Length: 326
Image 1 (cartoon, one colour):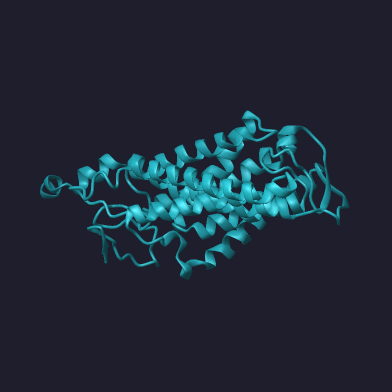
Image 2: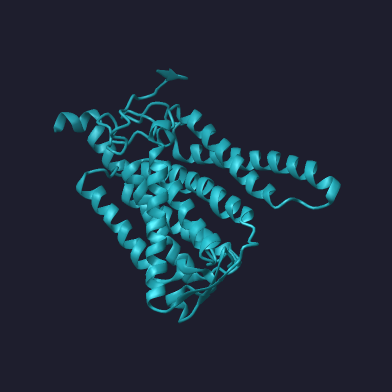
């Protein structure tokens, strides 16, 4: 099957994380043998530029339309407008990127949607483990309930939008594009650092909070994606962690400046233990546990030979001259 002259490889979905023989890339990358096919079309910088351009353009159109249509009568912009704008623009930009890459969205294949449940369970287990440790140390207590808590803003922003839009941007776009140049290990490090830095814009952001996010979430999510090549897994994990952390257990989410939920929580102890105003993601308990799980997934990548090699290594191994020497 082809589109605009580019062959779409047929890769069994049972092994989406194993690099292909023809180009040493995984199924979520466009086919890129040596000599390269459609050099300019598949250039990393061009694909990133297309994604950003479509996302910004789509956001301007969708957001502008919603704001004009909904704000004219009341004079106020509903809380959900900006989240919906970000979500729609990111999804549209991602599918524009898929069209440019001339490939199927194997990372969102419907037959692999069971990974969503796996991610939800993993996120719940990790969050409950962190809360359990803080509770055992006397640093977390439930002091009441908040039955009037309005979950919808958090569900839309910290839950649905963050889980989908951020996973598309940081794992399905940035991680993959870095991976084609730097290989899996370089992409994991680069995308984790950028993911952490992106949280510096939050109201209660701190440098330590950004470092913590990079270590625990940036590494864990990228490693989980590299092992599964599935956005279902990372979306489920991201959604479950955020929604249990904030709306249920009453912690601030990534320095968002909001620390309310169905449970009224009381944190006590030093900020390095509780996470302070940033939330429990800045707790050493979260950093230690989630980074340990991320390291375990990196162990799987290494020992199952799932890592994509850097561009220059793939080129050396795949060029005809190198093949003849081998």
